[in-house]
Length: 279
Image (tube, rainbow, N blue to C red; front, side, top):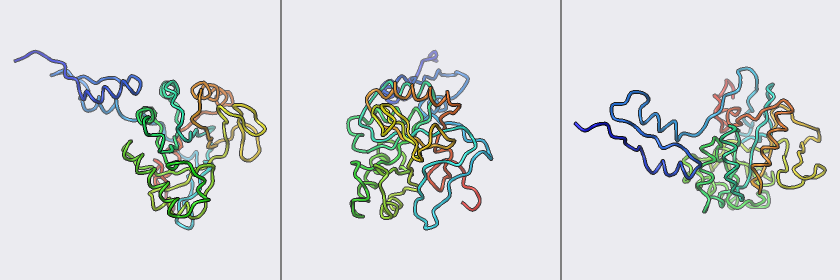
């Protein structure tokens, strides 16, 4: 009988891992005790997940009375948490992905699907770091200015592209500029969307915001600072890693922490949280 020979499990996955920022190649030794190759591979290549909220610390958003996807712009929670969301996808900063992975930062990506072309691996690595890939249209139009067919094309084709590339169909949709109408909600439902996610505050990373200056922070309600449950809008822009690092410092200094938005949304609204009675 031959001696023990190392077997490289799934070479292609290992190559992808290196491209995505150093994911380990999983090896198995014949006759070796410990976790199976399958479990090691799942641990190495599985998407990072984040803790669920404490029971009783939050109230899930409710379905809309009309049966269409509801509008979610904040989470009702007692925890000092905020939710970081990032839009578009036209800048590709590998250091940003490294920071998200190293610091274990929960971020939700609303991806404009045209940016997948030529950069699919970048968003793959961000997904592996724990960021869901949700829908932000194909080409970033003002949805309220479009007819039903054009809106449906923008949403459904973006979901098709994201599902094909990343293996999961988006359940959440963010309309560009926050612009939508009842037609948007109706066709979004037809495309498999369960909720429209807007925001309660914006971090103007890499640009200037009205009255707050460069890299400023502004609340939609005109207030100051962070509030529990804020959904915060960011964008893929040049220098993103440094901008996120500085913003994380501000969040932590204020006594808050980022949390995973998907864990605060019930499954019926596109998240991971179990549906509760009456939801």
